[in-house]
Length: 412
Image (cartoon, rainbow, N blue to C red):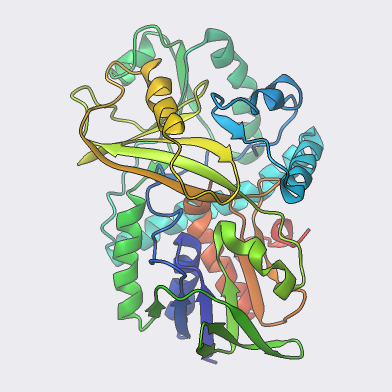
């Protein structure tokens, strides 16, 4: 039976949800406060990464590592400020730095990451999406020999527990695989099943498909209020405009906590500002996307560009670009790459990642309304988890058997 659904949020998660609903024959409207695909989905590193199973909070992180995050030179920077929600988030983050919690979160992450990897391949090839999709894998690169050796234990656990395999490349062999790396880099682990794409082009191409499916996309529409009757949400208000539907999806990323009171829940999401610089390809350009582990810098080669990205800044909803964070990207890449950056810059960008204390998203119905589904809090992996989330959201809304167990993503 066809019904109408309003998806609030036009990032990759909202777009994927709208796609699967529209393919199932439903009438769908996307409402975005800005431009479709213009927020955190725009200029991230573009990884579709089933390798990213281990959650961010893990044993050994508490102590010197956490204290270093108070330094503005740290790849992960917590700007000191009086914010009860931030300190509550950090306390819960620290609580999740146990082996038990790490393994629980890893199981939930793996299911979404693995399903999304397969779904993206079907979707991109089936719909002919023009997004520079490439399957070259991902390198986890280590400058220090000790760190390279230490990673073996984690790699073996991920392979044994989840079947996500990788191959180690020691110094010398690594440079033969990827000549763009400096000779002194100690080694890397290559995850061959990872892929990458241009996220802005994915969203642009996907938008065309949505419009062909009859999806209505309303940009510059900020939701200001809810209209409800009992446990049913009837409409949303965007200023003076009222939009009605049978069902609603909250896919608003880092902005989702602003709906907490209306939804009757507490989404423990903090905006983690990530940065990227997109530039012309260097003459010695990497062929394989890579994470420079000690510097926490992501490197993505595109056919017509090159991107350095990552870092994390917990500083609230500050819309300014911190040039020091951009400089850290170039500085970090300089330790690993023969030609780490070029002078021809196309775009300097930031996006607010919707970070959760356990590194798992929320995919669950709102306590206050039985026709509102929340899909938010994908931390650094909104793109990597987007397709699987969209399919699961459609299945939950339609009461169909879910393709993965939704239990790990319930409100908590």
